[in-house]
Image 1 (tube, rainbow, N blue to C red):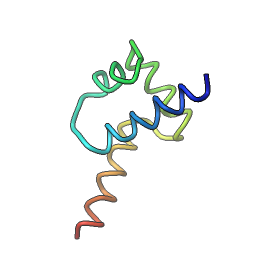
Image 2 (image 1 turned 135 degrees about the horizontal axis):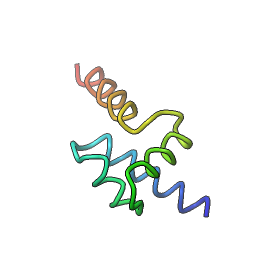
Image 3 (image 1 turned 120 degrees about the vertical axis):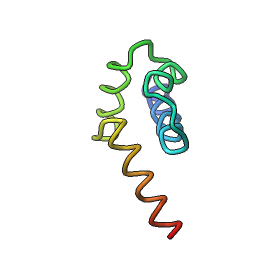
Length: 66
């Protein structure tokens, strides 16, 4: 079960970093029926809500590009 969670969260992190998909769409892509359940699991793994993770990754990418 921990491998499945790792895979889901790793994939979700990549999707959050790359695009502008709504959280509900990413949640469904990685196997969650509820955006709330996805957000809760994501925060448990990364200590950040998905929206904050996305914001931080984008800010970091802009700094690298500059």
